[in-house]
Length: 86
Ligand SMILES: [Zn+2]
Image (tube, rainbow, N blue to C red):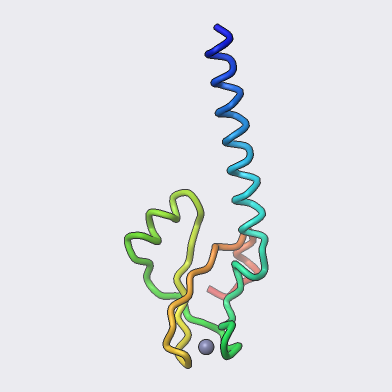
């Protein structure tokens, strides 16, 4: 019985820690920014590939593309989407 209880508590703690980490990542300016770190231009959203879609089930991700640098960048979807241009 105590094994079942400790398993439930452990899974609860792991889930809570996972969501806390997820929230803090989604609040990070550096990980959610839509400006290119190289040239400072606003990047465009492009279609996500299969890998990014799979990761997005745990942590919502966006694929951005800088037209000036011709580079793809991966960003975490911010918590408040209203503040960002779609
Ligand atoms: Zn750029």
